[in-house]
Length: 129
Image (cartoon, rainbow, N blue to C red; front, side, top):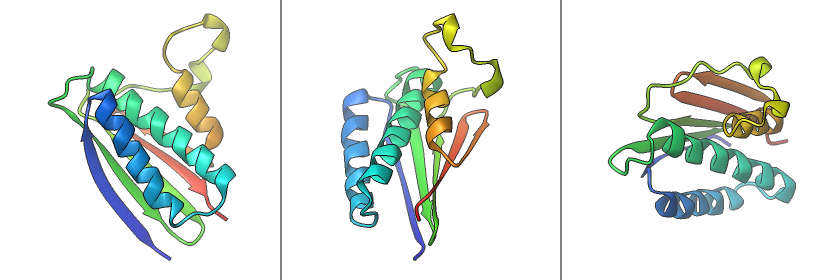
């Protein structure tokens, strides 16, 4: 089964919550594994909220775009904001530094089977079998 979903949401946290809820509801109709859906929800939440907060600086005139591509064995989650982007290197993150940024991407990397950051576009690939 191949499935593609595209959507976008303004950088307002209340609107983002209902956008993520709607997206998860759609995926619940396709993916029955609850543990897998928990991971996917965390990934979606971290990436979309990070795009709104850090990329778009909560400017409601800017959007965060989401593309989901599902094949028989994997789900690709692509999130893009309207910010300048980042140079992200997982190896540079040190949890003992107690920084207020970077933890969400470390978490998403840990939950993903593949993870890429390209400036203001982030891709998480999760196996679904």
